[in-house]
Image (tube, rainbow, N blue to C red; front, side, top):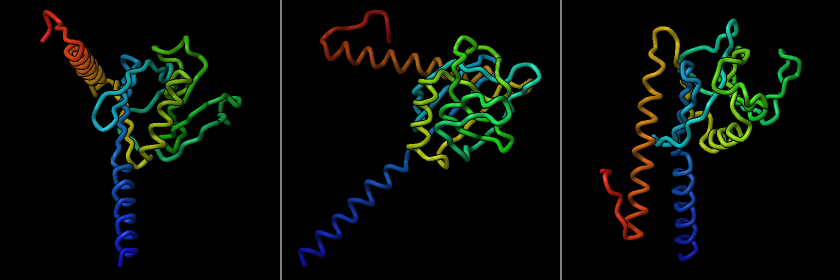
Length: 183
């Protein structure tokens, strides 16, 4: 009797732990106007990074996508075996979010259609998507002529600023100090 109860408790505990592990969602928004990526985990903005999207003649598509393939060490067969570390593919035509060693180009349009990130940021994003699962990840690209790509970036920056101010106030409160002039 005790063994059955112990087994049932272990199984229920495992199910509870495993179901919370699948609750994480990752929402990646790429703004082609500002050349910024905002990464939200479970609705909270975690990162805002500079990116490079498609240069003139090499358009990065706009729209909502779900990643379908990930490769830690991919090399482009189309572009002279160019390294694409931590690739997250989101279109069947081969568009991906990936690391790039051309960090001086970040913040402006410079790619052949992919979304380039600094290598360290690409590794962080790859880990987040791998942990959450591709089925729990969305990639939204904005910044075309009609989709008002700049609106989300401004809202995300405002939300991130408020979040950081709230954390600072909390830390000062713990230290017994106040932050004058902020609410």
